[in-house]
Length: 226
Image 1 (cartoon, rainbow, N blue to C red):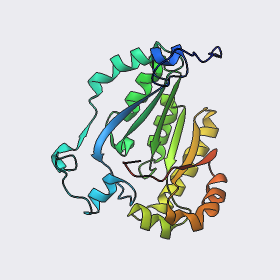
Image 2: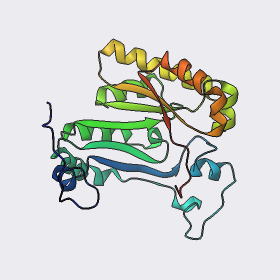
Image 3: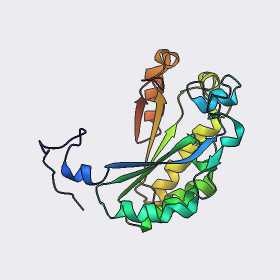
């Protein structure tokens, strides 16, 4: 279904593009977990905690007892509300790896059943085996961003702090093959943080993953302070 073009309104506050967007957000992000991850990324606070390079903060944000999952019981009501606004996109996000959430697949299916037109998520692809890939495709996820950061095992190990590069490549290729066999419409894109360490390999990254994914994107390199 094509949505009507919405003309910008001149009387809106807070920078909303239209009254429609002021009525309900065009993008809703749900953090599925807090400091639950299987990577040790150099440019992520979760990774720095797992590397032992970032200790407890004043408010205890980084302490082990703050690690938790989004409660599934809250989700159906949220999905129904988002589903009432056909322009709204739902993105599963989080400080950690979405595939570690025990109800991740159920939440995708619930979102689509609630009528949400576009549901997206990201993954580091470490756990994206054939079983999980099939479940994600069958649940109807519209877009999966594979956050990988490197075109080779050496840079991956440095940036990600693990040695899963070959597994990640296999998993990315496998979900694309499964998507094509099923005739599913899920888009698979690969992303990297546009960090200083990536620059010498940036074009290699683009070429390497462009041969395997639907698109390649670079996320801005910045601090939490902007």
